[in-house]
Image (tube, rainbow, N blue to C red; front, side, top):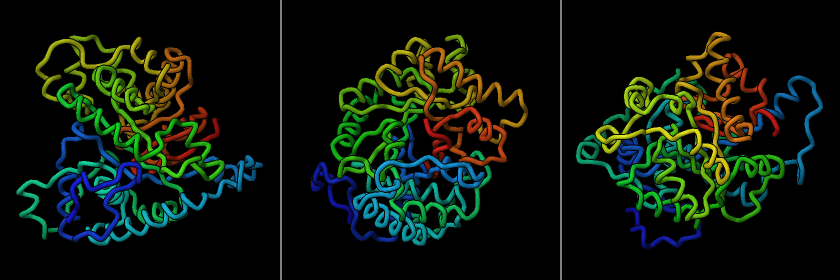
Length: 372
């Protein structure tokens, strides 16, 4: 049985690292699938990969010289990575899933829900009744990629991983819960900015015995400004705000209709309320002074939805330019709808690399495309 949250020692990093009951793992996996993601944020373990170094070696270019011990993860990171990799492989076997990227992403989220979140989701009665049935992973926004399990486990085992909590809408009704969650994360982990990720890839150390954690807020909602940002500031957490730029350009009276046709889920208080549901450009600029404002395409699309030069311009290059104009900073990271990993054969991904975007955040990893 999982002990009550009050039994956990704040400051110890991950929670509940002991043995688990297979039935409880399957029930939690179902609960993660059915949970309303705006309530508590989706916790993830993500692999950290330095594609910039790999790309330099592949093209016989002189790779940069990492600082410290050639970027090798330190003893803390190695112990952490080995333990998480072991648990990831074990939980994947318990869930009986394939090795595709969709399945691996679900295992990463289920394991992190158990270990990272103070209050993991609880399976409902239907999930309890179905505990012995095969788990079905809903398809993502892009084709699942085979062989993802081995790739992710290998990277994580080498000590290259980061915890991430992905929020979408943070409604006012959940403000106290969001604030409490962020305060807990800040006590147990080392909240990161993009520069901290680069330093880890270069030196192999977070500079603390606490594991690194990214707290991300997607989709440019107004409540990211009204609820999430104040909670971050109270907890001392830098937020990573991923903004689909076209949403911010939509007139207030049309924003609900835009959201309905662009996979931007609104909570009840937004669907039935009045006023705007997207942040303004002035608010995005103000956020960038205290946090990081990052690119999430223009119209909230997938990598598969970007094929032509015009689509590349509209969904990749123009959002990067617009965010830089508004915030005064070139976006330090990018994310696709659905979290597609880097694929040089995808025109949108190739454009990110050519534009010098440093980081791509996907459903299974944080990938360095270039040095900042």
